[in-house]
Amino acid sequence: MSDWKFFTGGLNAEEQPQQSSLQPITERPAWRQFMSKADFEKDWDEASQRRWTELRKEMRLDNRSRERGQSFRLRQAGNGQSEILTAVNSALALRRPLLITGNPGSGKTSLAYAIAYELQLGPVLLWPITTRAKLSDALYQYDAIARLQDTQFDKSELELQMMLAKADNTTPDRQIIDELKKGRSLGNYIQLGPVGTAFLPSHLPRVLLIDEVDKSELNLPNDLLNLFEEGSYEIPELVRQKSDEPVSVRTADDQLPANIIKGKVTCYEFPLVIMTSNGERDFPPAFLRRCLRINMPDPDNSDVLEKIVGAHFQRGDEANTDWGELKKRINPLVVSFANDLKRKKTSLATDQLLNLVYMVRQCRFTSAEILELDSDDDKDTELEVIKKILLRRLTSDAGGK
Image (cartoon, rainbow, N blue to C red; front, side, top):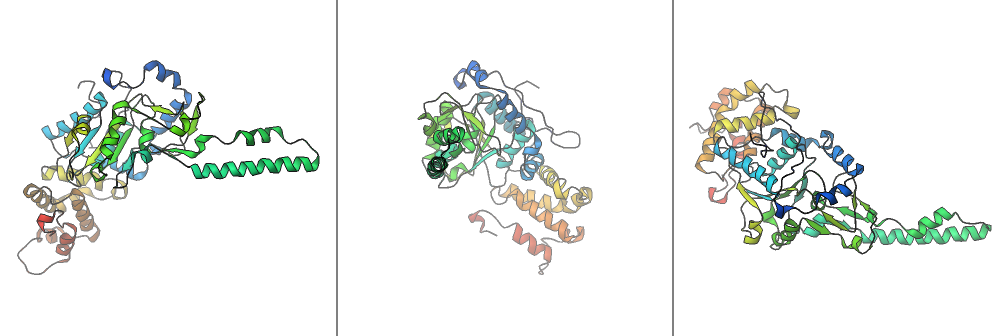
C-alpha cells in the first residue's frame, strides 16, 4: 500500500475498526502552503504539543462520537469503496475540502467521525448549518457586553480600594491597584468557534464537519472561499491591540485554550474539511473548484447492510446481544430492505432499518412472525404495524407510504 493512503476504513479479523495515528504529512502542494515550517516551529511550543497530546486521548471523545467512529462501515464493496477512500486520502494529501453528497442516512456525517477515530485526530469539530448560520460566528465570538461589565466593575473596585486606603490613612496594595488599572485580558471575552478552532496552527489536521451546507443562505459558500484559499482569518479585536504578546483565548475544545499572536490565525496543516449535502441546491462554480467532490452511495446489497446493522448492535448497550441468533432472525428484513433500495434508492434511509431491527429485538418477535410479514393475510399484526410506521418513505413522490 502506498504511503499516501492514510485513511483505510480497515477492519481487523474480528471486523473491529483499526486505529493508526496519523503522522505529519510532510509533502504538500506548493500552492497549499499557508505557513512556513520555520514560522510554525518558532511558535510551536510545549503548550501546543501538550494540547495536541490531550486532544488525541480517546477520553476526549464523548460516547456518541466514539460510537459513530467505531460503527461506521463503508457502504459499498469494490470500486465504490475504493472511490470513497481515494477521495478522503486525496483531500488529506492536497489539503482541499471534501464535499460529500448523498441521500439522507447514507453515512455522510458518520464518515467524518470514522476518519477522526481511525487516525486519532481528536474530537470532530462540528458546525451544523441552518439558514441563519454565519461564518463569522463559526470563526469566533466576542462578548463585548461582558467586557464592558467587567471594566465597570474593576473601575468601581479601584475607586473603592483607593477610598479605603485614604480612610485608613494607609498605602493601598500596589499589586492589586496595578492589576485593576491594567484590566483583564481581552482573550477572556473571545471564544473560537468550530471553524476558528480547526484553523489553529498544528502539525496535524483537525477534522471539521460542516453538516448540511446546502441548508445555508445563498452567500455562505462564497464567504468560505477566502478562508479555503488563504487558510487564515483575523480577529479584529486582537489586531487593534498591536501587541506581539500572545493572547490566550477559549476554543471549541473544552478546557483547551490556544494562544493567538497579533490577532491573526493561520493554519500550518489545512484541516480536513468535510461538507455534507443532501443535494437540495447547486453551488457556485468558484466554490466547487476549491473542493473535491464525492457521492456517498447507498448500501448496494444485503451483505453490506447486514454488516452495518451488526456494527451497531455489537457495540455500546447492545454489546451483549446474541448477534448470531438475531442475525438469522432479521435476515428476511435486511433482504427486503435491500430490494426496496434497489427499486428506489431515495425512498429509505439505513437508520430506519436500524430502528426496525431494534424493535424486533426489544419485542422479541420470532423468525416465524418475521417471515409472515407482507403476506396476503388481511390482518395487521403488531410487527406489520411497526414496520409500516418505521419504514415510511422519505420522498414525496413515494407518497410517504
